[in-house]
Length: 59
Image (tube, rainbow, N blue to C red):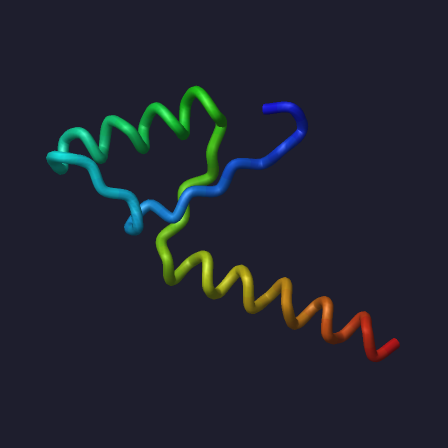
C-alpha cells in the first residue's frame, strides 16, 4: 500500500457481530497485507522499539 505498513490492533476492532469483525480483520490482512497484533503484542513491540531508540540516543 504505497510503501506503508498497515498494523491493526485486532482486539480493538469491533463490528456489528463477531463474524463481521473476523471478516473485516481477514480482509484487512489479505487485501491490505496488514499485520494483526493484539494490544499486548503491540505494547511489547513498542517497548522494544522504544528501548532501542533510548539506547541509540545514549551513544
